[in-house]
Amino acid sequence: MKWWKEGIIYQIYPRSFFDSSGNGIGDLNGISKKLHYIKSLGVDMVWICPFYKSPNKDNGYDISDYKDISKIFGDLNTFDTLLKKMHSLGLKLIMDLVVNHTSDKHPWFKKARKSRKSKFHDYYIWKDGEKDKKPNNWKSVFSGSAWKWNEQTKEYFLHLYTKNQPDLNWENPTVRKEVYSIIDFWLSKGVDGIRMDVISLISKRLDFKNIPNNMIFIDVMEKYYANGPRVHEYIKEMNKKVLSKYDIVTIGEGPGINLNNGLDYVNEDENELNMIFHFDHLTMDFGKEGKYDPIPFDFIKFKKIFSNWDKLFSKRGWNSIFLGNHDFSRIVSRFGNDNEFHEESSKLLATLLMTLRGTPSLYQGDEIGMTNVDYSNISFYDDVETINAWKEAIDNKKNMKKFFEAIQKQSRDNARTPMQWDNKKNAGFSKVKPWIKVNDNYKKINVKNQEKDLDSILNYYKLLIKLRKENSTLVYGKYEDLGPMHTKIFSYKRWDENDVFIIHLNFSNCSVKINSNEIKDYKLVISNYTFAKKSYNLNPWEARIYKLIK
Image (cartoon, rainbow, N blue to C red):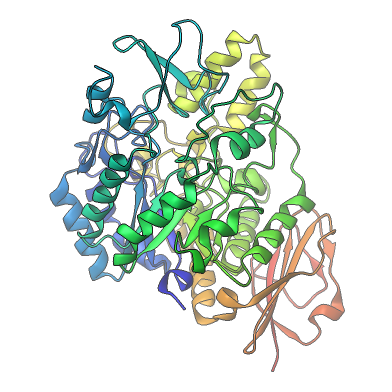
């Protein structure tokens, strides 16, 4: 048993959480001011997205100094104060480590691009070529070519994300030593865990073969960008050199990780990572061209994904359970019904999150049912991925009305609008105009309203978290899908030698009958409908947790 298996993660996007300095951007001191709120949820770990020094071309995921704090968020003293306060409240801090790439403003890259003779040149990945002829046809995840011409050295550098995020060359042992030094710097301060950004991409296939035409985005990620030949060697070395020296949790973000290789990253016998964030359920509606080419949601497939990953980790390794984060749409807008059944479906998704085997991660604002934003035109959007995709769509003469609808549905900015604290101006997030427009529904959906309402989404989350913590069966117990082919209900069993639970989730806008024999010896523990009784009809978007009567 491990503390990180029994705990619950709360993820913070710092620039959108709470602005304490009055510049329209959230900051570390703002997080400090809201720690009692975070503690009141019942969570144990707080994962904070990057707050290192950065030009913010990708909102902090482009780092120019790994051992310093961006001035917009505070400084090292602010960080030390935050960490001390968190520990005094029994909360653990998980930092976000981005080491597949740096910012192009990092001193390493500034020196690397000046001369091929610089020792820093080999810190990055370069290919000879002609100015108008790319080394291969690889595309950036954020649109356009993955190669950028460097005039000083007359060659290309690789950037799998923005052109301002050159990929590090992990083949160079000095680069790896630098990374381990960075990790040790923060862990020695008392940081309790690390979430490793796109860690599955750090090892490159050095033949850099062209990608076949018309290969879908997910396959490109799995077969060309992720799971390179030395990735496990690198992670094992990282574990041996630094991670194993501390009592921490390590979570790898795993684009391109699938059921065939997922266990390789988290098998306890391999000494690599504790958990991974896989994306099977979050990319299942991506079409051939990716997220802005959406395909219909397949509920049967959705359920199967959870079952398959639970089975994979049932004997070795450990699962991470999450439905959204800073890179995806709001969960109630994506998997629920954010209109007529906003409250019910928000609570249903909370029930799913807190009753599966694995460590749940809750993203800021989901606990009050924050929804996708309804921006009227592209000028409101800030996200580099969104803007690049829009420009590329114009160049490719796409139907821009249809493409904008896809952006409204899929843009990362849906999850990045300011946290809705109350019904005052700017949702109580800031006293000045925020860096990105607040969702217009903040007067209705906010923390202050829901703290007063015993039946709110917020208070339902608190009840579920308490229930999970009081019943280890919901953490460690076995899992079985009781109706994998049912088109509306996700019904599953959790059990061990102590207890048996059955969870019924109606993912539809209509009433659905359930099997009365399944629950005849069970008592209803909790439902998202206050008037729910032991009936055999589930209301629209109703969630019920039953426990076997002993």
